[in-house]
Length: 311
Image (cartoon, rainbow, N blue to C red; front, side):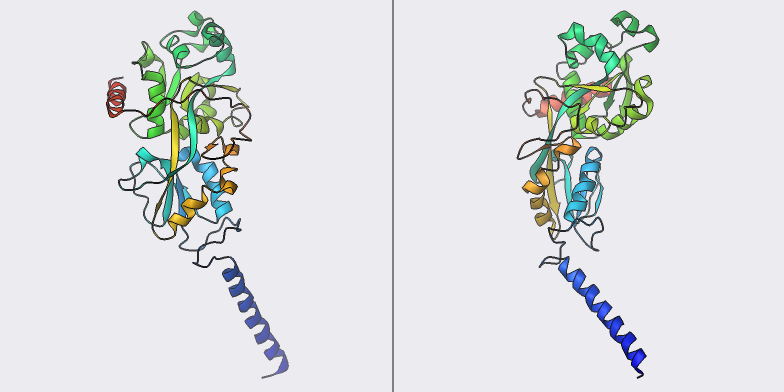
């Protein structure tokens, strides 16, 4: 073999060896991505993170940090194997369980100019009881601009997710308020879809929404071209807990890493309250939640779902 051909072969072999070394260095002893990786491209067969829609931004960040592919999980669907599902426990398929990794309170988000009309007559805060006094009424009669027409509220469908059911509990836990049917103008598939619709169409679609704080947090910046959303918290009020439920080989390890200080410290930036540690760095516009209500009973759940179906 001539000298120049031998040199080319040596270079090619060296490149292959370097590539193999890079792959080995990026993997742990069991073949899963090492904890130090921040790559958004996961190895084939890597354990995935599947998160409910309101957590998609946080999920993408954690996936990049942990070297895990991400996808959306919707309640009532089978996530498959080799996955960690991050969702309320009530939304998980039968047999899947996990530890709580994050929490979020239910909150009221209302456009600032609308809040300025309602809040003074409600002790300075706009909670579910304040909204109840506006359902079915015209803004002109409430002291606002008559051009705003009827008071409009948006909710996610409580028959489709645990988080939407907790928001509905905040609204109708003591009974369906009079006039609500005339004001309920947005019935979204989930809390993320609800806030996206409000961000896209502004107060023409809904004057206020009741949803998870994390879903509201995801749109606080996006609505600034339209207006500003003010956030209020029922006290006491419902909270939603998100668990990390593993399924399949390697999933337990990834679920455990979601409870690490490194991961927990990243959650607040996305409007999530970590399961451990302080909620430092929450987005501007969020406040102090109220005291949490106790768990919902089966009887309460049945009554709430029946009330929604009757609207």
